[in-house]
Length: 372
Image (tube, rainbow, N blue to C red):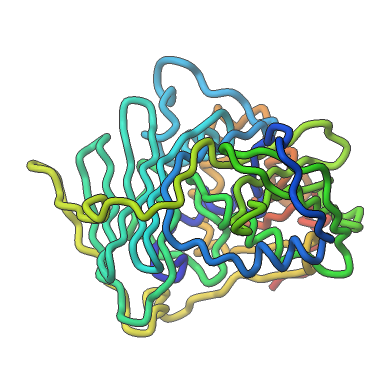
């Protein structure tokens, strides 16, 4: 859905590759024994298309804490660094409703506010109660994937995204993150299973994914795969050498019955401002002439994504890293500045380009030197 639902590039870059999960409790009744390959197949073939539930996301990436009061205290109400820090630290909760391939709703609960993204057929709505603003997007007939990521508060939902954009700074579903993790499974990855776990009252297989490469910050990822349906229920990622997950997301409640259809009907509240968004016929014309695609170097866990200065926001990227909220985490390095977290590093070069990956800083610097 990233092709059709726009995202803000700079905060998204900082979230790139930072996959999440939740620590499940020990399981009750044991499941039938399955090999790792069988659990992978179970997850890949699950048919759950209707459900509702509460998703909780939490993270501790080593970023500076937000102030509890005063300017910037509400990360969801601010753009730039406050929004980034807010969504990459602390705990966030969302209600998720899905019914088939073209009806979905996510309600993200912020401090004294709520953000919604709703898809009903070919209509997609974005709503923020913070400023009572809404945006509507009429999707093309062939857009059939689900919009399961809400833009961050204060983010312009009409801002164009990029092909292969990293995830936005929003609460994600376990399935979205599991899909990204499982796409990295190749001969450079060891896959095993641990003891069964319990998530949202359901017994699940504990699929453990460990990169064999020493060029990634990721030590291990764990996906809880529902033992009956194969649906991913939680995901957690632990940094190399760490004892506990740095980024996590998972269901705390789950109902596999179809949600009430009225949940997918949205009308802007009285007094709200409404913006109509347009999707170009080819889905990519909004980039305009002179568009430069991101560069990609490395593969799998070692991948580094680079954004040209124009796409990364140029001065906006530099302003982001100059923000006092991130000052403790930003260091000056040859050729630019580095924002370092437990799972992902971000390099903003002196000429405004941005490079990010779940790799050590020297990998980002090498990619910046090699990129045109």
